[in-house]
Image (cartoon, rainbow, N blue to C red; front, top):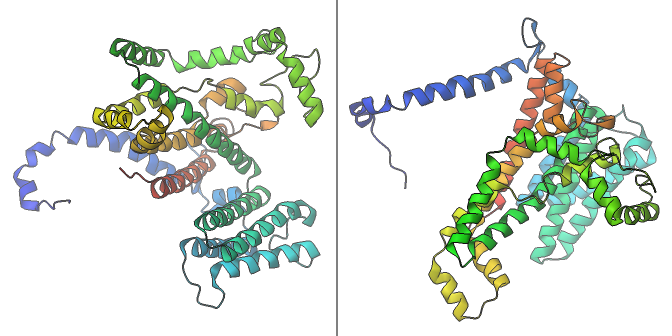
Length: 427
């Protein structure tokens, strides 16, 4: 339980706080001051140096658009979704989830019949497909929650309501706001999901090293995982860029040498990708259809040094008696991981998850090195961080770049709060 320290006690030992003053001053100068300056200049037409003109919400207007009917719809939809997910009672009969289903069906019907639209600037045929998907998802999710009382049905229906709102918000922002920003956020979401899967490799590697019976081999593997941290990140990026080279890259040589290219050509003909052709070298960083798969494959086998060390720290805290009791009960190696190690690693999983989310939303350096500041062909990988960099230093519109940074900051806060709320640590 937190203890309140009286002010007179603090004053008595004021000299001790002088030791912390340099650190506080440095953090305030090099962290909080630039962040405050970015928030301030987000409301200015600013080129980063001498042009500074107050424009209010204009930068955010460019990013989000301004359709009053649309924002009224999104606000009402978000409120009903939050009320349905938290179980709050609506001040009218039927409940929030039923009201949300009626709203979704009504909006979808208006679009389908062409009677009206809360977003007049968008053609019906452009918005119809995604709006129809949202309406159907909401109606089916509410029906599932209303008819099946099981916990899995409630969870699945709640996930459907949340995904429907996110898809509605994302799709409307793409057509009413800055399409480059919101398309980049869509790519970032794909990379977050991919990095979530990649976290499995680090956890499995840490468990394998932890279970080694030889302490000397365990120490040797830990050292081997620390060694890559010495190599500059730029060197690794340039190696991967040469790895993807269409003419001399190792990847294409491996595909042709093993005959795997023939399997890719066959799958291309089966699924109609129109990417892989017989006798042609795939251009992994030069074909818009291959850029995102290349970014996902980047870093294979995805065993992060920091992640492995964090997991090993958590595993080292598990008492040996737990393993002895498990061996006496005849627990298998998989059961040890599922019932012992993974639950006791949830603290480290939360830490890695937060670091991964923040890093993925902010990262753009590897994309800049691999694809340039345009984000590759057709700007397919122009993620928000790279878009912010390009807006500030190429287009010299630093005020808008600051506004983009605030948008990224808000998304990081939301995802971090979701992680803290729903990724439980129970020991």
